[in-house]
Amino acid sequence: MIDLRSDTVTRPSPEMIKAMAEAEVGDDVYGEDPTVNRLQEKAAELFHRDAALFMPTGSMGNQVALKIHTSPGHEIISEARGHIFNYEMAAAAAISGCLVRPVEAPGGILSWELIEPALSPEPYYCAKTGLIALENTHNMAGGKILPTENQNEIVSEAEKRGIPVHLDGARVFNASAASGHSVVELTQGCDSVMFCLSKGLGAPVGSLLVGDEEFIREARVVRKRLGGGMRQVGILAAAGLVALETMPQRLYEDHLKARMIAEAMAESKSFTIDPQSVETNILVVGLKGCSSREMSGRLRREGGILASPTGPFQMRFVTHCDVSMDQVDEVRKLLADF
Image (cartoon, rainbow, N blue to C red; front, side, top):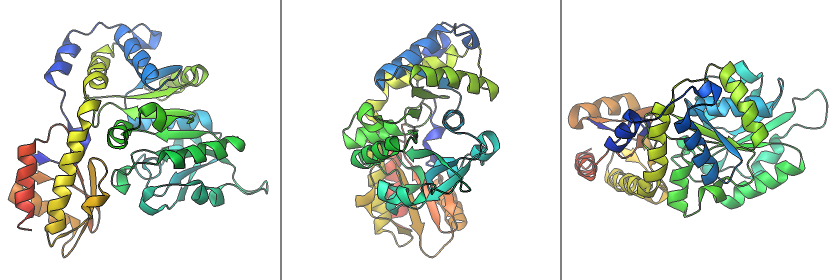
């Protein structure tokens, strides 16, 4: 099978497996796992932050941040297709007692001009805006990169109003590889940032939450409350260290694969996509003449290709390190007949 459902399906590299087998471990709930500590120090250093905290999942990292930044009854502003609004099981309501206020943005790209009208008005009987949540890259907008000028203005205006900003940077290293901006530049000014090791970076498990010392101190408490306190987890952190050290520099390959597939789709009668709009490793594609369920079955039967329906007539294809150039060529040849 050629698995294009997500970059979460990647398997650890031989180097990661070796590092996991040889990892020095301790009890991380006591702060005594040396490999976890090295990973957290490395993440904090890369993002120019005071501290970082290893999380089992990106969703937990996001929800820990939301819990710290808000109080029950607050609203959280998110782009309408954002992950925290659509794919985290209403956890903002269940865990933090907050509602998400979705804001539709062309191409998924939020701006202050779009956010400002969604802020809570003056009357006391309206819910207060407690947080602005950004996403970079934007998953369901097709891996779009949030421009630094948009983010800088949002952060600046939010700061004037005392509203914190959290960045869901699950794929921020993809944004960095495609834009040429460092992860420091892409996250500057945000009060907290979550990024994943288990997507394009290829680690089997894990994400990190970065912020200042007080924020990470609180995050450790909330993580434990949510059941995320792990013990000899250096076995997983070891793979994360390899991922951070070796994988960001190869992400441009995944972006090239995505563009190659998009070009083949543009020539097909079954798909709707503009190859010029592809910025990173995610393709969100419209369908013509058949449903996503029908197309999913046909791709699997005729080419051994797995992709994800994301709507009645929409699908998502994601390239990653476990999809070879030979497999990309196979996909392109098959799509030519669709």
